[in-house]
Length: 285
View 1 (cartoon, rainbow, N blue to C red):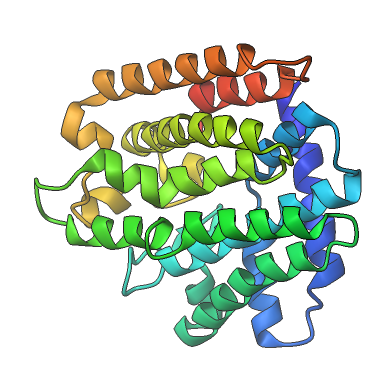
View 2 (cartoon, rainbow, N blue to C red; view 1 turned 180 degrees about the vertical axis):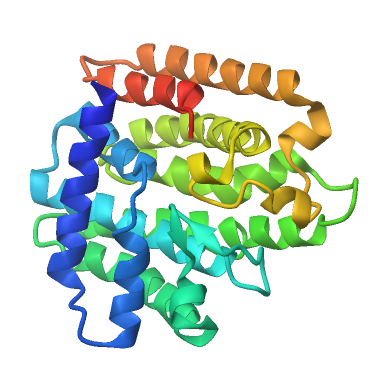
């Protein structure tokens, strides 16, 4: 059931990207190379499931927010894969952006997708100005120099070392955007704050499971280089705490998140969000 839900989200997001980005230049072709590649669309799925909690936004606005979040995520993947960063040649089961289009165009494609995320939000004809401001602030906080960018910097600094706060690295590099995905569709400020906190736990659990899967699956199954973390001598939850402890921590975080979602006041549609939580902990790639 959740697979069908995420597949529908992915189809809607891909169509929106095709509506917005025309392949009439190398940089637009490079953008499409990454955003249309096979992906789980977890972040976009979280956006839709969160929007369904309130039931206020129309389908067009939900689709715009899904697409904006995936644009931001895709930018981060392109830049993460660059030789100066993680130096990965495979992403989403295909050659990384810089392998196909070269480093310079890949950098520009990432920059363009970063900008596009905000452009999609501000151009939405139905969202209120106040809501747009909150969304832009959420994305900026999640992905800026105190968020995802800082997480990437700390990740780079920890390479080849036994030192580093793996919880902080994962929470910033991965957790913050997932947390924002849960909060940004929400108009009610109190609910938005609650969901942001829940999203932090979900985001950390997601990245811990990424570490678990990367330590135990093949490159072909993962769709990315399974040996990347070892090659780059990165800190991971598995390398710091061990496989069993990592899995246990992720399960506890998801159980805690589900309990908080179930305990939300009001007659919200919580089922999809619960299903996504279950999917995050049980996924096999």
